[in-house]
Image (cartoon, rainbow, N blue to C red):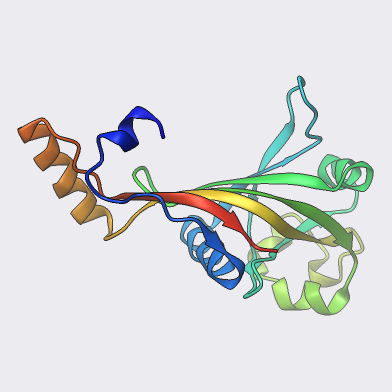
Length: 179
């Protein structure tokens, strides 16, 4: 444990597995709505990253995006499917780091399911635009940082801790293992 956790009087570590991990990923991702989608992950080199809107997180914890078939991200995923998704739900909570395997398809039924009118900004021919692809990210693991009782309680605990000079923190964090 690092020093902040040693000063913590409450248990603030909770690893989650299986469906519990998938549900936590879904809840945090839906709060954040967007993420940084990172690809071309190589040791010692900067990875490629771009903001992306998550269009759906299913009950199994899979993340669904729409992307253009001529994008750098699609090209990178076709060469190396390992990606990282980074979420921030608010300034104080809802942080999520997901590592997974991306798969690109042209599944028309899934495109129709995920389609929103605002996407016509990027896909000018609508949901039948021939450039649209679906990216499914199947998470293999992740890590989260959140609070237990909401931002208001977390703030009160932090303020009280600052006044009395003691670590009183409402945080919770842990590993997420979906498979």
